[in-house]
Image (cartoon, rainbow, N blue to C red; front, side, top):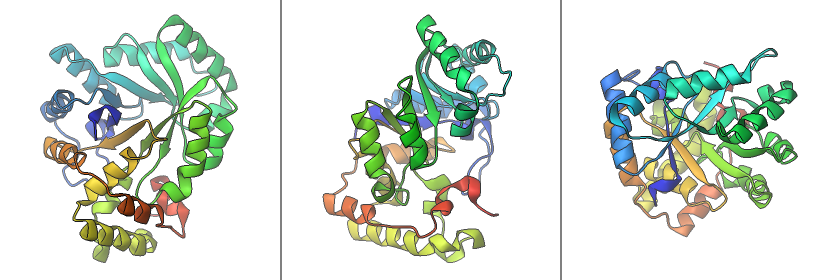
Amino acid sequence: MSTNKLILGTVQLGLDYGINNNSGKPSQDDAYNILDVAYKSGIRCLDTATAYGNSEEIIGAFHENSKQNFSVFTKFHVAENSDISSLLTSSLNKLSVNVIDVLFFHSYQDFKANPKMLSELTNEVDKGNIKKIGVSVYTNKEVEDLLNYPEVEVVQVPFNLLDNEGRRGEVFSKAKRQGKEIHTRSAFLQGVFFKDVVNMPNYLLPLRKALKEIQHIAIQSNLRIASLALNYALSKPYIDRVLFGVENVRQLKSNLIATKDTLPSEIEEAIDAISVDEPRLLNPALWSK
């Protein structure tokens, strides 16, 4: 697979993030090293947000110091009296870029609660400060509703070995037919796919059966879990970009090597067929810890 569909997520650069994260937030030097290796490996897109600690500032400092410039997709939370121009200027300055490639509403709820913001963002697109407007969503119903808004060109949606073709394929294909750009996130479900199924936390026990299925598929195909997860999303023609995060350079290099594997059609079909009885467990925000 080519790296041109990959987006490097940067929440881990600004926060101590992830259920399987044992190393915490990387140092500034380590964060710069991650970005440097990503760029030199062909990754040109970063995903960040104003809510991701100092992630935007780290990216901006890297841009200033290295002169290697990424395309940046960032997200923002809005309140009723939010000043879009000020929010945008702040992010542009922090990121040290002249344009935001995609500016996302951080949630569908933010988008629906602030209908006037869409026209303001459209004005910023006309000014050349933003290339595209997007919305980060969770449910298929939210994707369906966004099909009614031509101004929203990009949707970012979870998609992975469990939140898969069986759950998402139909609505993603419909969105693509209507010209939407599909970015997927949660490729590793916050690291759940790498956890020991024997010692799962109680709130994730209902996922044990499906996770064992994934492990069986990995063994049968002689592929690592990371390879299954990344190549499964990358293989889907209705997905334009696949977002993944790392905690260190070792993980980044390992994941990039994994994308060079080939996913046989029968393995892809086996993953498509996996079904989760409790869909709420596919949304980390709903996990009861």
